[in-house]
Image 1 (tube, rainbow, N blue to C red):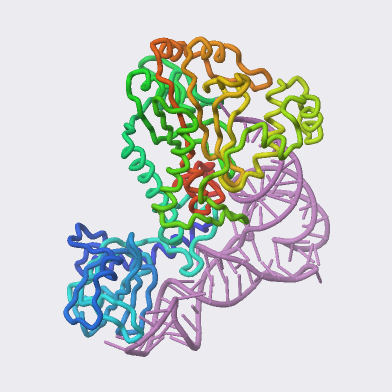
Image 2: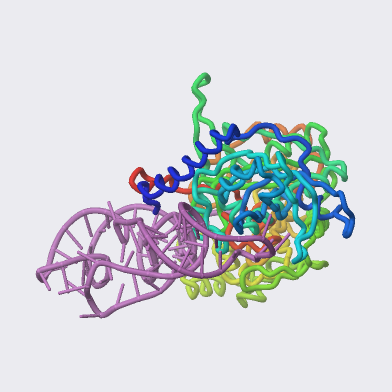
Length: 488
RNA sequence: GGGAGUGUAGCUCAGUAGGUAGAGCAACGCACUUUUAAUGCGUAGGUCCUGGGUUCGAAUCCCAGCACUCUCACCA
């Protein structure tokens, strides 16, 4: 933990330099800086052995080598780094300012481009070519190891982002993935929509919601746990292809795969079914891999994941047999297996016990992308039962590296069955705060087109595609306990 | 909630059979006009997470607490 006395000592030193900068007539907090070119752009356009090339860049001083009458700076901007050379003989008037520069300061550099004798592309700052843009009053983290303290990295992500370039790269990849999803769906005629985050009934999933209150209406509201029921209302309304990329909120535990607020893309396509959604999912994920320039083989923790399709599609009951040895119809064997696995099955519904056994024995074995298809219908109140065998629902979950990445159904559009499913809450589950959404049943009574629906966890997708094994590495500001006064 | 681990300088980390601490980087000073984690010499910097206990003496051992990490449990 930081020592406030020493911190302020370093801060005072820098504050003193700030005063000296101001005394030179320079605003230590700069202002508009026009015609900035990115470091990568300068690198790309530089031509060897051609005189007279100039450049104008801005960024943060991440390395500084003071050789006396010559200073080399590594300047980092959003695209990368470029070396800036400051020479006393080239900028005698601004030299006092140059000597006041600290690691972490933000500057602009304008001058001739050239290469040093070691071959490093350098902006040789001309007189008046040094622009002070902002003072850094804190000491930056160690220049080679960066910021390593996990807690501090999340709490001060603004430092983490520039002290650890791989962090910046990961969030750039996240941005690219989100925009790829958006482009991919938009190109196929899907309409991007936004539905309520504050809902009077938290439906569309089974999870504990966050509760809030609207003063003017004196109304209890829930932060949504899923947008599903609203998006399907839009199918009723004639929006035949819709998607939403936005946050869901679930008031449950935090771990490597769960943050209380997380981002989902949900997609609904009228006249499709879950097979259509499987194809779409596979294409969409592969498009994202291509967009971030990744190989289809991705290192994830200790494992290698091969994303190259076609992905395995296996029935729930087949996988149950494969990994637990149990036949889905042999409930005695399943319950025996459950007890062997230390699952408390007493009073638990058969289907729930079966699913517990499935989760325990199967899921962690699904490393390469695997569609688990045809779930027991009783586990899927929003999915359409299979015509061929109504005991099963037309649903898939996509598992990668043992983690649920996507969930999809052929949507249930029969209001009578939907009503019954809502009514008969599954035994063996904890009581849920989900109330009956009668208006949703009414919407179905107007007629919802048969449709495929899909949800993909964006955070987990980014984790898998960037090799981040904890969700907090793909969320800029993950939820943390606030620091108490004494730990500040 | 259970178990395990971690907490030492601004940062990254060492360390001691119980005898109040060290390196590198950063900082400050000096030197240096082609460095690449610049280099060399010097200086300064610490409530060793917090509170108790044991002890002549605790950063080290014990207890409690706080924070973080891992793990198990919980979790459509």
